[in-house]
Amino acid sequence: MPDTTNRLKDMKNKSWFDTRSRDPYYRRAKKEGYRSRAAYKLEQLDSKYRILKRGSSVIDLGAAPGGWLQYASRKVGAKGTVLGVDKKEIEPLPASNVATLRADITDPSTIEKIRKQVDQADVLLVDLSPNVSGVWEVDVARQVELNLSALGVAERVLRKGGKMALKIFEGKDSWRIKTALESSFSRVNLFKPPASRKKSSEIYAICEGFGVLSVSANSS
Ligand SMILES: C[S@@+](CC[C@H](N)C(=O)[O-])C[C@H]1O[C@@H](n2cnc3c(N)ncnc32)[C@H](O)[C@@H]1O
Image 1: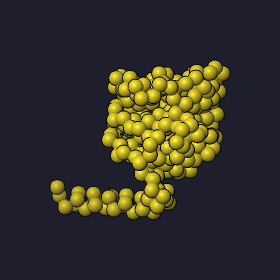
Image 2: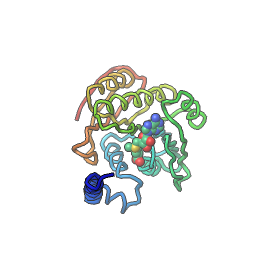
Image 3: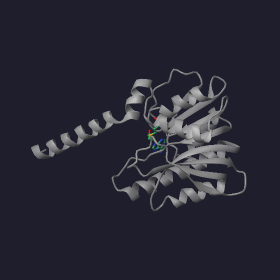
Image 4: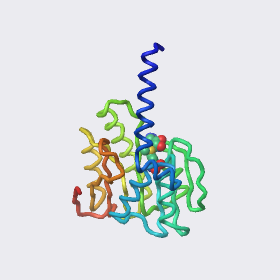
């Protein structure tokens, strides 16, 4: 590889590391033992919308490396359970209420694997991101497909009246998942938590009342 290309790559890496080490949520996650800064996004969604309760049964799709799992495990407590699913290996967590499953949620056989571990869930957490191509609209379309697969999981395991928090990449195709959510839940709120980077075009949908009619959508 030519020298100038290597130098440009080194500069890009350095600026990425500098930005990350200045990020307050990254530093806080290191200090507080969270596996990812994403844990604070869930904490902020949960404190605004009260998603997780003691004793709840939770499924977390796209769970690696496990920041959301750590937060959810603490919130549901010893009487609750959390199942983390990811196509990547999730390093085991030292919490007796957490189980993990390595599986691709777009594979139709994954739903049965999930159902072997959880018959009915109270809450579905979805923080799926595709492998990014660098072309935003392509990534949005891929993420919509992942979210539609997650909704397929909801249809099989989420209890009537259950809740879901789901990440959406905002773009040309994101209406497809928003419309699907609005027809499956009685209430859909859109919220960007402060821990979500301003320059990122992600937003979270907090959905309540699964399978209960009366459609409404709010943004805040
Ligand atoms: C942003 S990360 C999730 C971070 C996680 N919420 C946390 O707190 O650590 C997105 C995850 O989605 C997973 N993912 C992407 N496509 C998937 C698929 N088809 N099946 C299962 N997991 C997938 C990725 O492997 C990645 O770990």
